[in-house]
Amino acid sequence: MTIHTGSPTYQTANEAQWQAILANDASQDGHFFYAVVTTRIFCRPSCKSRPPKRENVLVFATAEQARAAHFRPCKRCKPEGLRLPDQEWVEQIADYIDRHYPNKLTLEMLAEECHGSPYHLQRTFKRVMHMTPTEYLVRRRIDEAKRALAERESQRTVAEIAREVGIGSAAYLITLFKKMTGITPNEYRKMQTEV
View 1 (spheres, helix red, strand yellow):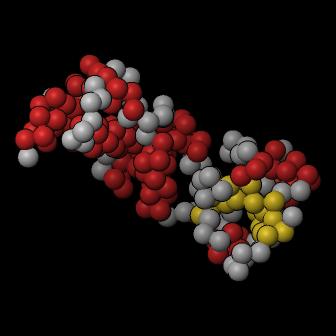
View 2 (cartoon, one colour):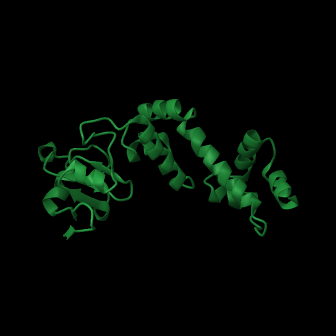
View 3 (cartoon, one colour):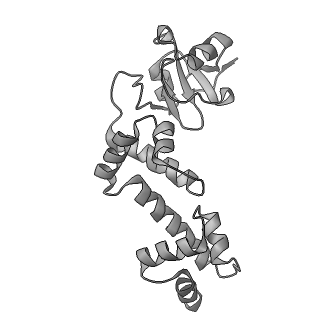
């Protein structure tokens, strides 16, 4: 099926294209590029990334068409033959963390989703952001915990908030929260309600 959106024309993957994507078929490189709607990244058919869900795949004739549709080139397979600038790649990684912080995230999972090796991702992220991906994830979770604690009408317990933000237990949230803010979650909540 071909889709026209006023910008570049793209289509869903036909069976041959889908099989090429699943097989990482290098012989199809240059014949088409595929983009994954959920990650906003486009790849060559030979890309070694984890196969996406078929319903999330769009196919473009050229890399330029994929770019024009606001997809970013894959860091792993470099569909344009160029490296994605580190700053842009790190923004992709941070955006993925921002959208998935409540879930379990590991360096390996981030590397798989953002198309790079764990070692390179860790090193590049730290150089650009001045913190590791794990430190960024913890900060994001603590920021969300602060937001939840500041809600005036909320009766949620610290344990409930810990689960909501992806931290396994109230005790661990209290430890991380105090380390980052100098006060406990309950002290923070009390300060917010007094304002």
